[in-house]
Image (cartoon, rainbow, N blue to C red; front, side, top):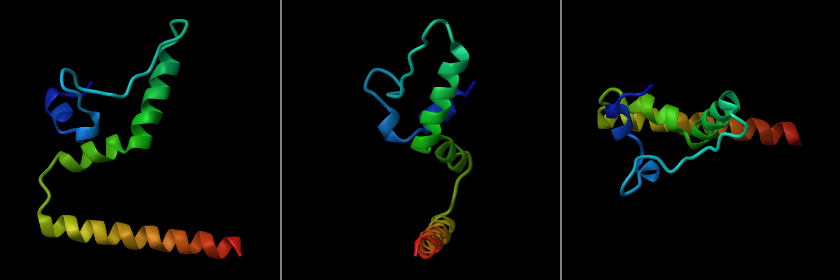
Length: 87
């Protein structure tokens, strides 16, 4: 399980006034494995695991800018590559 400290570092969209998480999954027919898979997929889609990984350690603002710039270049190249494949 995740520690309380990791839950405290989640993005604000996952917080609720009285509780912690807005993401919910219903368990059908006592099938917990399927519910866990659905939950992990939802968390992956929201970028929760990535956010928690980034917040484990302090990141200097200059490092953050460099990381975001390289991510932007990577996204742009990927988009350009897909656009060229389409044509």
